[in-house]
Amino acid sequence: MTAMIEAFQEIDGYLAHSIKGSIKPSMLLEDIEAGSLRTWLRNTLESIDEESLKSGDYKKIIGSFLVKAKRIIINWTDERTEVTSEAELVDLQRQILNEAAKTGVMPIPVYSPVPTSEIARSVELIATAIEPLHEGDAIAYLPGSETPVEFNRSFHVVPESLADLLVKESLTNEAQMILMIKKPDFLGDSRWDFRHGSSPLLAKMQDAKWVEDFHRGSVPIFPGDALRAIVRTTVRYGYDGDVVDTQHDVMRVLDVIRAIRPSQTELPLGQ
Image (cartoon, rainbow, N blue to C red):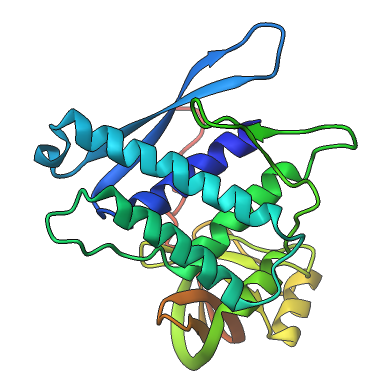
């Protein structure tokens, strides 16, 4: 249940941007019926432009759109067990955009399509939320007074394959970077957790010789240390020009930059 609530919260954020980028939906737990697993949720809206939300009708229209758009997504997943083409995601994108246009809340009827990367993420969130269900379990969406919509338990996605469907082209470049080490990989089969400036960065270590020395203990790493390295960055772009994903690989470690540590001053004994 928690996974589905969190999924809806994230999905609502994507959907609201198709009407106005400054709208921030929030989902509140309103009630849990005793003796059942029925949970009632309520949407609230916040906006950087508070004037746009003064009208109660405005809130109701957008709230109704969020409900209908989620219903569209659930019905879309009910028609298939997997996603096999980018065209399927574009079809879902078009259905949501048409629903946004029906709201009529914009003075100039210009509505933004939800990027296909966010459409894919929304589908993935729903598939992940229903994955733990066992045989005989069921979960349904009850949009107000409308007919309940049951989730398709047979629907599943592989996130990596889903992302591959969105890719039109990839651009790769290599550059020397200084990466602050947040969390090294001690097992040898995962990515390292770095910080580049103020941004987090996950990277796969491709310098096999350096990694071998690190695991053997020949290259100790201490808190606050950084790596000077040649980093390959691959950015994959979708058909709509949006970034699908970004991958970083440390191709060669040039140096370990040690953190400056305070020197320890010996204190005289017996004083």
